[in-house]
Image 1 (spheres, rainbow, N blue to C red):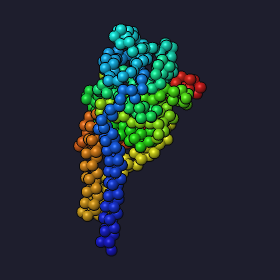
Image 2: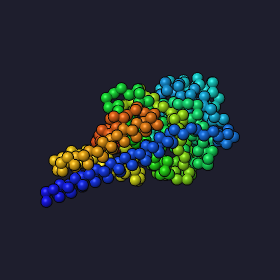
Image 3: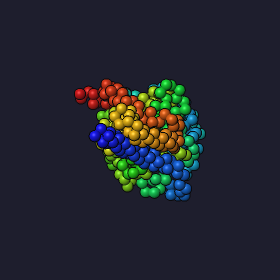
Length: 390
């Protein structure tokens, strides 16, 4: 009788471990390989006459150093017709001096500024609205001065979607994580790549819920037809997720994440930049209804189930159960190392291999910590009008 009971334990533990391993590996492979394949694609060769004129709307705020590098890089783009509209939200005069100097060299460079006294509004959204109104072309590409183009093919890659009849093009930029020297740098890089794989894979399957504000393009008329950010003006953020959720459909959206079309984001403090991104997207994600929320959570639970089964296998079922749970666990960890390294390479971030399974186990607690921080500071996400009404 005891032998039968132990056999049942062995079978149950092995079956649970195998099932969990299959789900985790399949979930990870489906998303990482989809994104990796798309990133490896070459930018399509499209005749100049089929490429629409572009307006590049650039948001900058006290970032004269990056702006000095950004303007020559964007002006060197291999694109037939485009203009650059810089919206300056700086509080110092350095940025204005940079813009005035470059305006003498580039006749297609224009700039405007956010008026003083608008500190209690969403300055990013206000900058986008001002930039779109100043833009002369219907097709606009939104970015920031810290996102330096990786090649002179960036505009061609993003505009290829417009040439194919799309109204929205989801791009991708990656942070210069090589400059991150603070403790926790691997967790920050892995967290970013896992987050990016999640939203990009959904966009590639026609279920867009987020974009990258450093490389995002759409028809200007689409913005005004949607009444701009009317549904989330009470929030400081949401310009590249809540708004994008409203205007995208499976038929009107293209994705461009080719390596030559990935701007590199430079910042003096990568740790602080990553923290700001976590706070921003973590807050607005509560307003987005998508299966992505639940699928990633379920997979995180299964990632923890595998080592738990392996740890409990020997005391409960002996050597057979230990092997039955241990082999799927090792297979899952091996697959995670390979797949996440491939994703890191595709998305231009710090390569992560051996630590990938353990970072995947730690990430739910990392996100939980940010949920508490976001909840504690949630009022800072609302504009002045919303806080006043409260």
